[in-house]
Amino acid sequence: MRFLILAVSLLLATPLHATELKIATWNIAWLTLRTANDPALPRDLTPRQPGDFTLLAAYARRLDADVVALQEVDGPEAAARIFDPRDYAFFFPDERDIQRTGFAVKRSLRAIRNADLAELDLYPNARFSLRRGTDITIDADGRLLRLLSVHLNAGCREGPMQGDRGRECGQLSQQSTILAGWVAQRRAEGAAFAILGDFNRRMTHPRDDMLAELNAAAPVTRTTEGVSNPCWSDARGGRPFISHVLLGGPARNWMVQNSLRVMVYAERDPVMRDRLSDHCPISLRLRLN
Image (cartoon, rainbow, N blue to C red; front, side):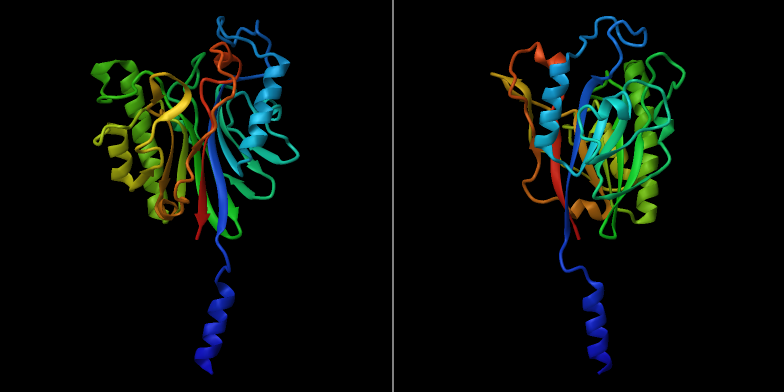
């Protein structure tokens, strides 16, 4: 009888089904509501027209992700022009930068905002500073998933991340070490986690400096490994990804097989790269066991 009671208790305590989430990352390239003559914007920036926001919103509806890690978005007001605020809640770091990271999260999910990974912004007072990381935890039916949205320094897409290769590589090396510290903390907690965003790093070399440093902190799975990016591809084919989704902890076993997708734009005119984005949304599905 005691065994029967124990067995029934365990059955009641065990979820009857796994929760599935669609997560995505999307750099929307200077998504802002500021006017073209705003001194905080680059002088050569192509201003978006109202129809461009309409197109982007249609792609967001088609994407229909539960969680979208955002990059280059000027806060919740700009995000709300793309993602319906009745369906999504927005999370952005405490900074005034135009090119912010962030998250759009379906309101059907419970999301907890954690402290910004402020250290990633190596020069917070610069006119075009680097970006903080946005850190949230998703609670999906009691299963917790820690998420970090990042947009790392550009200019060192491959090769050694050493200062003698230029300032950009030195800065990216500093950011990689900060990111590895965040990963090590998640490992110590035993947390399931994912880092999503624009790493400005290809990570295709088997001994890539950044990937090696992150894996030393905790094993991570690069979900874009072995595939090329079809976003704005031409006759030469796809290109290496610089945006990625890295899974760590228990989340490494949660990816639904063959669920990685890149939503390419129907518009093919090169002019539309500036009016939409030079990045396409990347998504995958997780089954939270």
